[in-house]
Structure formats: C-alpha cells, structure tokens
Image (cartoon, rainbow, N blue to C red):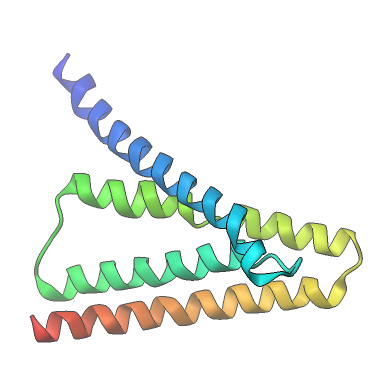
Amino acid sequence: MESILVKLLPTLIVALGGALGASARFWVREYLPSITGTEFPYPTLFVNVLGCFFSGLVYVWLDSSGNSWSQGRLLFFLVGFLGAFTTFSAFALDSFLLFQEQHFFRFALNIFINCFLCLIFVFVGAYLGARIHAVS
C-alpha cells in the first residue's frame, strides 16, 4: 500500500501544478489578443518565451547556488506548472494553421520568433539565475 501512495503523491503534485499552468495559459490566450489587437498568435509566443525564461532561471539558480528545492516543488513547478503553461503543441498547431491558410510569411515568422526568443530567454533566465546566486 505504501508504494502506491509514494507514487500517487508526485502524480497529484504534478497534476495540481499542471492544472494551474493550464489555467494560466488559458487566461493569457483569452486576454492577450485584446491587448495586442492582432491575429498573430502572440499568446502562444508569450507563454513559450515566459516559460523558457523561468525554466532557465530556476534551473541554473538552483544548480549554481547549491540550494535545492524539494522533489515536490520541482515536480510542481517545472514538470506540472511550466509543462502545462508552455505549449509547443499549440505552437505547432498555430504554425500549421497559418500554413494551411496560406499565410506563409506569418508561418515562417511564427516559427522563427518562437524558436529564437525561447532559446534566447533560456539563456537570459540562466544568466539571471547565476547572478541571483552570485549576490545571495
């Protein structure tokens, strides 16, 4: 019985983080278009860039500081919350729809901006994580 509970608790932690991450993504998708006033898929870009930034920041900050989060916190935030908040599957579908609608410039721009900014923001987050470690 104990082994089932040992495996069930991490699953519940990931599920809770995932529910919150997916809810946050929903709200970004609902309200960001009214701010940007465009049909470009900025909500997906925004969550991908922000998620990449925080994954880089938290991972390098924890790794370089010698501090650590509990397994539960890591599962909740990195696997659950960020896993549900960032959504490359939505990025891929947005790109497919742009291609299908023959918006080839938007299609190429969406792919380039998502890939470029997400990679850059992992590095920016990692840099800031190291800087946080240096001052603490």
